[in-house]
Image 1 (cartoon, one colour):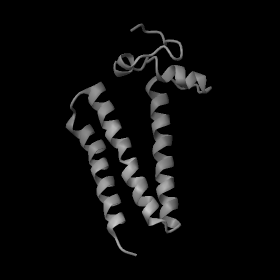
Image 2 (spheres, rainbow, N blue to C red; image 1 turned 60 degrees about the vertical axis):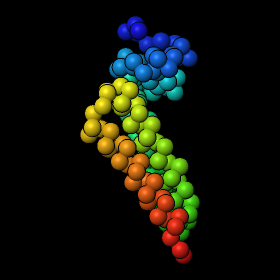
Image 3 (tube, helix red, strand yellow; image 1 turned 90 degrees about the vertical axis):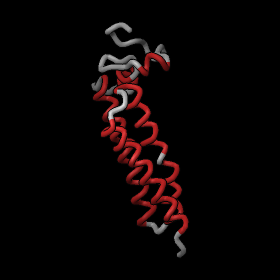
Image 4 (cartoon, rainbow, N blue to C red; image 1 turned 120 degrees about the vertical axis):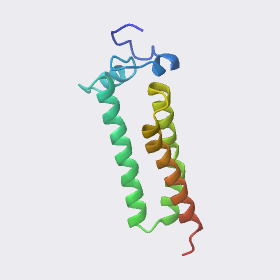
Length: 121
């Protein structure tokens, strides 16, 4: 893989797995959206925005008394930390601390969502 960013749409799944700070994925996506960020900085900002929006949705469901909607959002949203853990595993290898954070969060979301669905009232 060359050190210069590739054109948008020219990345393959194998290129994504090998991505670094000079990735063909994040810089082209960030440039396309007009962001001055590139590489892992663009990825981290997008990931943070995603996590904040999911958290805000859960807070809104809870405040509105939509317990079942919050439970389903937790259950369906547990895919996010599972995929994040898979990305860490593919990029960094088996680092127990990083994997425990992501996959532990997934287990917690599934357990909490299941408990909320089972709860009466």
